Length: 180
Image 1 (cartoon, rainbow, N blue to C red):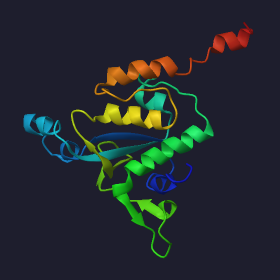
Image 2: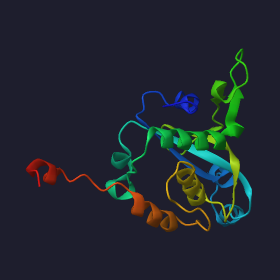
Image 3: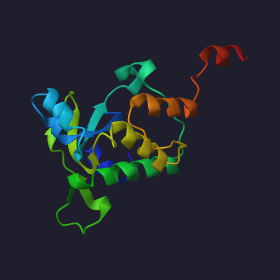
């Protein structure tokens, strides 16, 4: 993991991948996910970043039909990590004895996540019905140079449709073996 997210990866020893998500803090930390907590998530409120460490590939963890691969450059990866790091700004604590700098800050989780190997971190962006997890994911892709529009993205299908257009085609193992 490149700086600045190296401080986050320290919370996830022995993992190959980190998966980041965004959601409503009150809803995600509520013990009861009934009607009132679901409705309250529609109004602007504090957000959370869910980080899940994976020992296997995302496709193995979530299934091939739930994962799309995007080809990216080192520069795009740095931009994406900067976007995520900026979203984690409310979770950062300066490292004692080190001058203040974004690269000298550690991300401190605020609660365990819902899955083994996951943690919640305080998020700088606010969550609402108009700025959902899908909006945040679109902003993350856009910030790293992918041709994704962010306006009006609320539902997963709206983002999934855009990502499908730019996703790397599946590797054709059979074609590579036959040379055709």
